[in-house]
Image 1 (cartoon, rainbow, N blue to C red):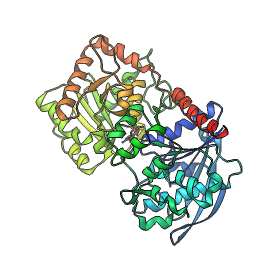
Image 2 (tube, protein in one colour):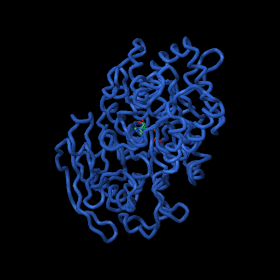
Image 3 (cartoon, rainbow, N blue to C red):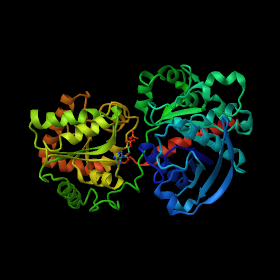
Image 4 (cartoon, rainbow, N blue to C red):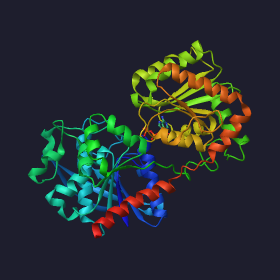
Length: 476
Ligand code: ADP
């Protein structure tokens, strides 16, 4: 079976968040299981493209409204990443550095999806499954199902995985002429509240919808940034499949970014990572180190961090180190910088994106704080477990599916914060300090959580089962 993944991100080519980690890992595991799995994504001016010499697979011209663009599809050998990769370089649109944030993102991603459909049309051996990820690829299932040009692709099953339902990519009907010609009676599929909403279009058009955890699928029925009704309606064709982690890349035994490698049986070496962080950021290594890694957006609860830090030190008077790695909302960045001097020696941050530092933080912290309001799956808590960092999480989405609170019988693999406000997060941090002080329990749990298997194998199998149910349906 040949599966084609269509995505805006893929690690290590371009990563903004968990989407990249998933699309960089799942195809590898599918290949290892004996399937052919390929990825097609936009080209970006990133380090990756300067390192390899691709072949030009195809090239051509593309019409977007009245504008014509020249494009090339570049092919990267399977040997590089463990799966074949295609980058769509549309001159003037996708030959840029950033993944998102241009005022012409609608044009970039619509053009990308048109090239993807053309690319599939031209392929001699066509994919048996087209697996789309998030709204940037949500129009592809519409194109293959309804556009005259792509009639030959009509019978290829399409899947849309929702990694984050908050972002939907809406644009006005004035840009409908960007789309390939389609059957006139299908216009309603494009419409959601008077706009073209690529995520809604994908949900309506794809043969199957998946979300990255089962709890998130349930949550979306109640809270999906305006798409609740649609998701309820399409529930029959939706399933939740929990993401896995790339346990080869995220392995403390071999991780090349760490200051010292370790495993659950050889934990003393782990201290060197904490020592490095403490020395670099001015902390006392005898105290517990609690870290946060993530995008500063409302969903992650990052707006509460500065106030929580104030509360933890001023009101609760806790002896603890707090480290924040992240970037995003400017107000959050400023508020986190402003308190640096006040709590110097106990609190510090790194504002920005730093893959290497993230690995050291997972490998050197004692706890990882995730006070998320929305967490479709969350990979951070799974990386934390694998690196022996106890997660402190809110009770949402994939966090519900992966973390259970320490109970009086000493079961559980983390600390669950039952409400998302400064007092509750502060209380969870206080519990963490207590856990840290109970050295026997802390050391035992740390070793135990490192051996939890959150690898891709199981989830990759679930995807295959779902693909097979669709291809079998076609044959019968
Ligand atoms: P989301 O996709 O919503 O951002 P996930 O938990 O699914 O959240 O994935 C986040 C990924 O991004 C993890 O690999 C995490 O380590 C990484 N990450 C987030 N912010 C940063 C940062 N500032 N520096 C390095 N890595 C980061």
